[in-house]
Image (cartoon, rainbow, N blue to C red; front, side, top):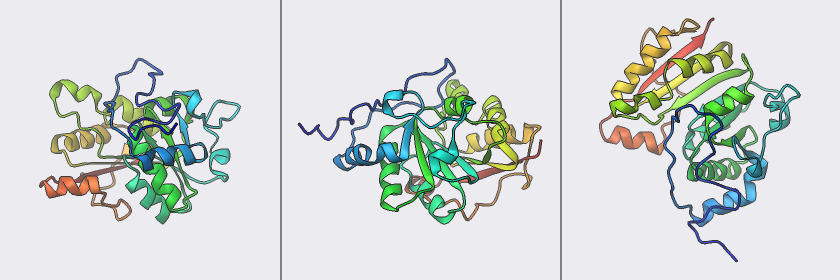
Length: 251
């Protein structure tokens, strides 16, 4: 029997299990999948994706030390870029296509975004992108060794605009400390948002981290390598100002 368009493929769950008791930085959403999205997951997920939390939905290769085995995952040794919250995969697919000498790991909690990313990277024939479903911070804590990332990208994370929800924002001191430790010396942390108050928080947190240096002395000029996605363009059309915060690990 063919499942209805709004059903998930077997073994997928819209809500990744909680591997720790930390406060979630994302809000799980139940959104129906199109037939094309379901087919993308069914046909291509085992080759390009794995689950952070659910072993029934694919596990990543790991080294004897328990770290992510990127050589096995990508079939080569190359610098690794971690993108947290890749959405529908539009941005990461474009960046990976323009940057073939680095590998990209896109982590997304929402299944429609995962499906969109799978569609994009398989249609483009990209071999330097893999996708993880679940909580990016849990993956970083459990599988990403210190000093192993070339860059971390956090583009347009959930702004959690209400004051009582600011504790859920991903760009805050303890999370930045965790991510900075995973960067190699000289590696970059790049954040972007179109929410003014969140941009101010991003800048303050990054500049307060003793192991990071902001080479721009404030907000960074928009880097050419970050494409304008449909999501970002909607914010621009609403009159939002997009701000980038870029920092380099120096300590």
